[in-house]
Image (cartoon, rainbow, N blue to C red; front, top):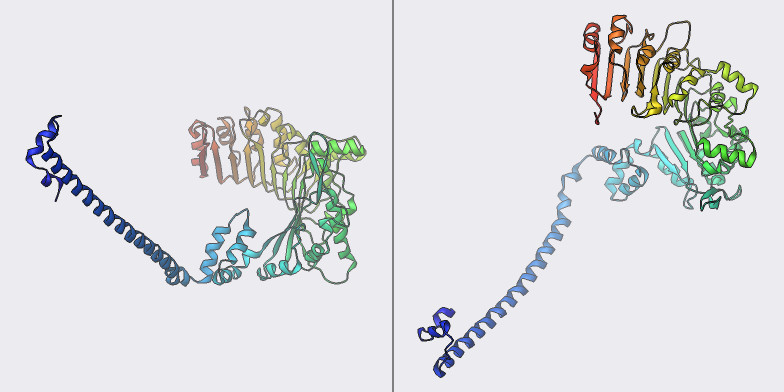
Length: 512
């Protein structure tokens, strides 16, 4: 019975006073306490039994969850997905993934159906990173990978973080070192076999940790020319060389580059910082750093991608050999294009005449220091049709284009030719154009049909002047992107657009 039923009325006074209990009351209350203790023990016993039952139920529930997880996927709709669709899903997972090759290998190890779905997607297998420092590298592994690309062109990147142990050069710093010609990772016969025999090879780029590694690679690949057998290397159309050696820089002999394939039409070249290269070259060899590639390897190029902050004479000497270029990307890295090396007759000729690229129709210039604008005229582009110039952020002082500099920029953009400009599209990124600087840059572009200005600051009267003088007669599209002010502040812009029927695209800078 509940405690309230056991409590007699006679002992109620004991609950509200401090009077001592009588012998009879004490005996009765003790009997009540014994009953309470007994019932409490019985309830604890039942709770223990319930806990045991609960644990058993919980264990069973977990077993059921495991069984559900085991059996449910067997009837999953994913199992009915066509492998082509599953492959497309994998494509989204792999898109722009920095560990694409490792991720693709992991997907293939999940199950047979996933592996088959990946294997029927040839585009997954077009790109391959080859690390010659890995002991597990084999021609068979590369060959099996590439076969899955079917007949699609294969792009290969040969890369190693290091070759030998680093060597100290002061201040607790180390430079990369080569293991020597016999032991260099880039001298391995397996690498030469891969480059010679891998089918459908169309593009190869090299990231050698030291210039000695590049020379060892060239020596290994030079043997291709002594064989009468056809080689995949002979059909490679695009080659990239990442020569970012900084403290390891040494001038590479011209004959080193004779290994470049005769079929090469595209070259991507990335050179280390000029300050590091020049300091090391003068200190150790008492010569200026240079990159000297034989003319026979450059005269048939149709596309060049060059990244370097080197002096103008180095860049112009290289461009002078590339007479058939049709497209070029030149990243000046904000550097030394307006500077020149030691005086010589060759450089005198470069300074007077520059380098002419008669076939060039598309040019992308990036990270141009505005102090170098006056030297751009040395790159002669008489037939240019598409031009993109990145001057940097508009809030950077060195990107201010003052009066006088606009004349140099206009001369470069229009081609400085007696015939009318051939430029059809112009994109300018960054830069602060003072007063009429932008107007003078574009006013003579009679064939321009698209003008794009991105993150650029310019005078609010620019378009009213263009409109009033009837300039840019063929302009069809105007893009003003990442503006730092309200587009309504540009006087005459709306009338210019409506009068000509020009398509206008406008966006504001996030910080504006």
